Length: 107
Image (cartoon, rainbow, N blue to C red):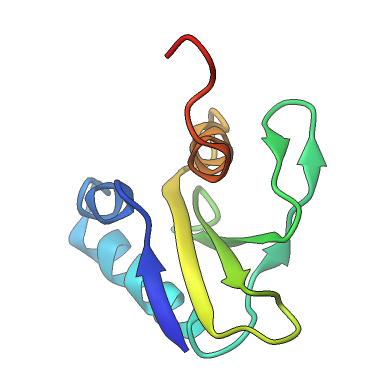
């Protein structure tokens, strides 16, 4: 299965605080590219709708990778990496929603 990185996600991986986290993240992305992996996400009033996406924990569960399987989880041909970041402030989920929906009006 092909793995695609949306704009900004490769920079997010490089910005992880240690080389070990970067390697762990990439290993999990490769695993996600071999078949459906991670926990399903859905609508959340704090972050937005990530239905059809999955989250993958790493770094002792402090960090997240958000992926989507295209065209669907039932018959994936691509794994799209939507966002990589810390879970602490939920920013990783906000980034994923923003990348799915595009810029909001006024930005």
